[in-house]
Amino acid sequence: MRLSHADVNDAETTACMLRWYEAFRRPLPFRSNRAPYAIWIAEIMAQQTTMRAVVPYWQRFLATFPDIESLARADIDQVLALWSGLGYYRRARQLHRAAQTIVNELAGRFPETLEQLRTLPGVGPYTAAAIASICFGLPTPVVDGNVIRVLTRFAGIEGDPKRVRVRRQIEERARDLIDPTRPGEFNQALMELGALVCRRHNPRCDACPLAGGCRALAMGDPVRFPQTVPSRPSVALVTGYALIVDTNGAVLLHRIPPGEFNAGLWELPGAVLIRKQSADNDKRRESFSGRDISPSLAHALEKALATSLEIEARVGPLLLRARHTITHHRILGLICEAVLTSSLHPSSALEYFKLESLEAIALTSLTRRALREWTRRRSQEASATMRTRP
Image (tube, rainbow, N blue to C red; front, side):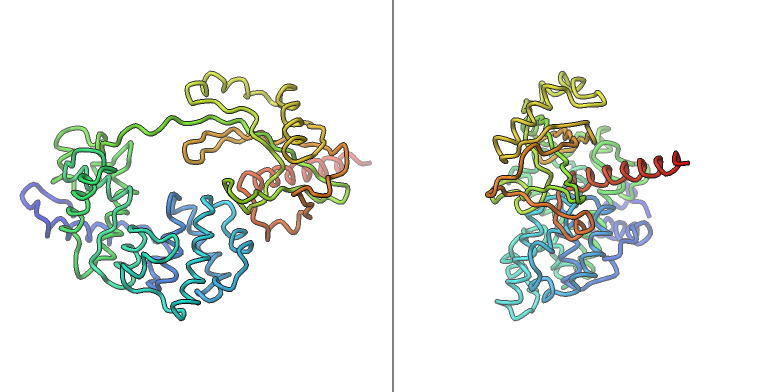
């Protein structure tokens, strides 16, 4: 199953890849489904997301929207609610618009050529090639991050893949290797090899079927491929959020306005409290490692809520500290319990929601995580109270 130095040619390399894929591919549910609609959903979800995270979302999504017509008819809020936690919500909006395009302009018929696929909102060269090869058997190579890593190492392709010249070399190499009779399986084999074996930092060269012909391995330093240029400096943010629950147990949420990141989703009322370049991030990290929020940050959050959302509130104890990354932003979220000290402004873009209704609401992942933690603590407190009663 492994390539040897004696048989490094395109035909044997392709055959070796397919044998490896048949033996070691992950049993992902959409791999047994060649329907264009199902593959399209999976490919859009898998962009910048791990397969482990994608599978349950894909299954829930198809259970709710089993075909293009049901997705096209759906309200965008329902689509976003199902997408909640998967991130990069622009993908969900484009998916919804593309379904409406197919139903309203293409009579519900899924496009079958690269040119037609590329006309759909949110479908770029990679997604179009993946659908075309997997669903329609077109010998079109896909080039994603995994494929770039495998082919630059295997062929020893020098230079930054973002440059047109280097990108063309990678695409040509992929085109040379693709099996015209099994293009979908070959494309998935390359991507699977990059995900499981030819990893970015710790490649498993001893388990790689192409090791015998890999130029980067022969050079002794596979990790130096692909030769990307340094990314732009990251920005470190400290954001504060207020968890406000009324006497009826409803939680106060703010809908993110158009033009902002995650527009259309609901989140806890909050604001950016500190913004620093990455050079300052490590120096400040220890400042936020305590069990509670500092008085200065609590005051800053109260002031920000009053200024941006017209909320007068008293910030209380820290409920949750969470770190996450969005594009080049490294974010520390501080979620605090809080109490309103005045009524909401009539024009305020906020609304109370009962906890039992939140499953149908499109929430940011951080908000959903905070509400789970708050619910868990209330349950523990209630259990403790029951145990201490005579």
